[in-house]
View 1 (spheres, rainbow, N blue to C red):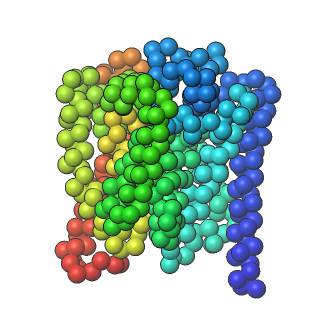
View 2: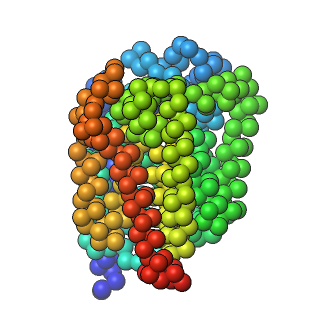
Length: 402
């Protein structure tokens, strides 16, 4: 009786959380029938797939010919992303947003479920039947999450790929470990940061499998669309401005911070890379320490947030990693820390600070702190955790578990 009740409550929680995903899908159907224009980025994904099928160029100064007339955005993803988006070509144009939003909420549920159930520890979701649906509902209020859904982005889906790969497949020694990271990186380059994560945590085969998967997808595209593939890797891959103004407040990366502070000085990227190189030392040390202690979710989060800082462009909606961070803090009963992180990402601060044009260059100290809130919080978090670990080492240099 005592074991069946938690199992029954867990099923109830999953059922209710799934109901939230279905409600999102139902809203997507309504939006399609009402001909509302939602999810500009999801329209780009579908247009990229159709452009590939039509044999038209993916990377051009003009917009993709398959885009609906209310969207005017370029295809900024890798050549391998286009065939991976092919299933979207089967979906009616107006329904693509609903499908991606539904899959995104499913990915959100998967991430919360996996991270809240650490190996050998008590599951956060096992404590109350309402934990999963309540956590899912609260997550929808976080700025990176609702903006990802609004834009029709796939950040939540890619995060679910990485979490499943590192915290499920890899930990269980699956021969498929690394593949999902390779697929995610074949769509957006930023998940490549998790390849060195696998290497630093001693999972060389998984890391090589991730690299091999990524390389295989991209190599195929050199054979299928050689001109586009060369154009992307020669020009687009090394040009952060291809995705928008790097100084805009919504670019919450070290590069964005430095460009705002320097008013787009030519040396901004070099300085940002230099700061990231220095920050890599405590970040890598933390990843290794946490992994050896069995805190794999925490180690993964250090890599994820370091990757957001390192990337030349990390739009605020890329910061969906705040969801597993809050979940880990709740699992560890770090209530105040969880509340602080939730408050930061619910506050919508990046939506409220003056921005656009050259507004970021005239902030002053107060607005600069608020306008770089995600960046400063991540840097402080990594340095704070490193300082804590250093104190633990000094107290018990031979102990790696707590």
